[in-house]
Image 1 (cartoon, rainbow, N blue to C red):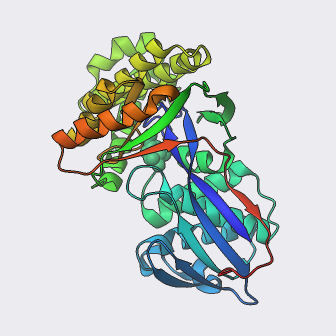
Image 2 (tube, rainbow, N blue to C red; image 1 turned 120 degrees about the horizontal axis):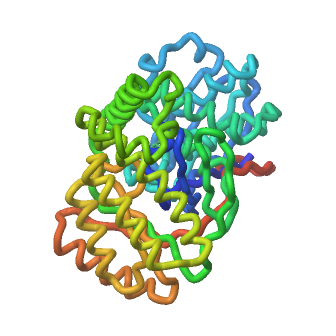
Image 3 (cartoon, protein in one colour; image 1 turned 180 degrees about the vertical axis):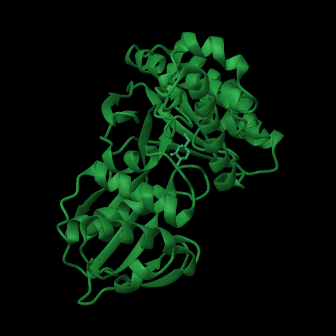
Length: 378
Ligand code: GLA
């Protein structure tokens, strides 16, 4: 069986998905691939070409093995997905032998972990005829990330890797899980501009931001009553009155989340009209809010934003993903992409010790599996 799952880049709606808010990711043509065949037992023998590393995972003892007894790294993601599928279905999964390869850089904030989870969820869903729908798989992958990687992420990355359609971004209301496939203007290209700065501390800082948002929710609940379950429940007018009363840093965290949700909705409209000026304004406002209110930017991300902004053909640019290093996303006029890349690369290199990388991305469909008859090494 061949399975593929894409990474994602988020156009706008950052740190909103664990606040019942809106997001707009695109699955990109940087993917994780798995060639695997079933084994007659419950053992997984997996080789990563990217890491040149072999792992062995016995599925029949996994349910009793605590996550921290497993080796750190990609083993935990595979194990986490297997455990969530077995818990959910009450079934033992088939062992596999396979090779994992990737065109998706790790540590750039392009959701390589979610893509890895999506690959294995799709593998067993197909191989063992589990018949779970995309949302169920996304939720189980998210749970695996919580319990086996210790990152209390939202649902965006897993949903993007599993549920997207080619040529479209995926608008998700993370409260209702309603989605809309949003076409991208054909004259614009999505460019990922990786700063080369690895995302340090992202797990612990991420969990801390999540807690600070929760503290804001509790403060609003004290003031406004039990009806407040998430920042989404506070209307903009009421927020204007009560935000100044919140303690720091919750006040600024909440202000980011609320303003970002409004920006996502405005962005949808701007995208539908290919309104470059509005798109630019919204992406820059998002970046500023992530930098100043949410405090997840860093000098390299800020330098990359200004390098891209000064380059020809740049419609808009902002940091993407969790932040603390990693990549920016830029929308660029297709006809000007070559001069854009050259100028952004030169400007950024002049300002940073890190080596940037630029990826022109096509938007692709979510994870798929297909059968094949050759050996996994063939
Ligand atoms: C990470 C998480 C997502 C989301 C983003 C920030 O990628 O996995 O759930 O919270 O950060 O928008």
